[in-house]
Length: 198
Image (cartoon, rainbow, N blue to C red; front, top):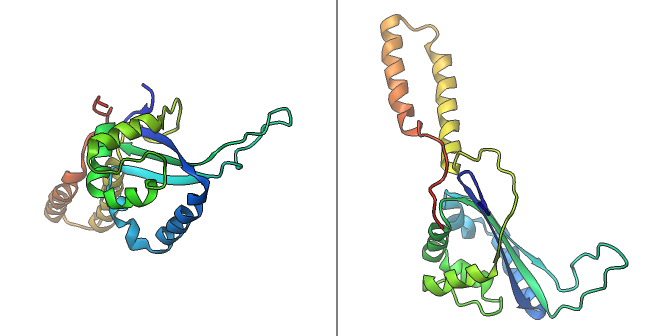
């Protein structure tokens, strides 16, 4: 299925914006990069692998050969890339509910952007500006971001248990092993395919 690789969904959205708005948006991105607390809400959405916005100026598109005519575009373009776990609807709902202010500060400069709230016009807008991802690589397609984090916690716990249990007497080992199992049990999820949905 387009845009999906295992549990991961890839999103690409391209929105036009008037050229004179680009410096304002770039200034906002600069501040966003410097002031790390402004990124906290986005980073706290643990189902997101990454999200990135890029501005391509109207005269910044490459010409692949001298034979390709130069384009005379009216707009600069804001390109949004993201990979996440879950369905498209869940992702857009979370963006609208948690990041509406930040999204508005970024996409407000794009043409015909309706705002992140209410969510229905926002979803319709994203649906119009989104382009399918026909192919992309995912190292762990059957594992969500949280699955990978859980696996790393289990590995750390196994390593620690191996270091501390070598010299234990049989009774102490059994007790330590049960404690180890209780500690890692919440992280022993199952991997597999993502739920089907849009």
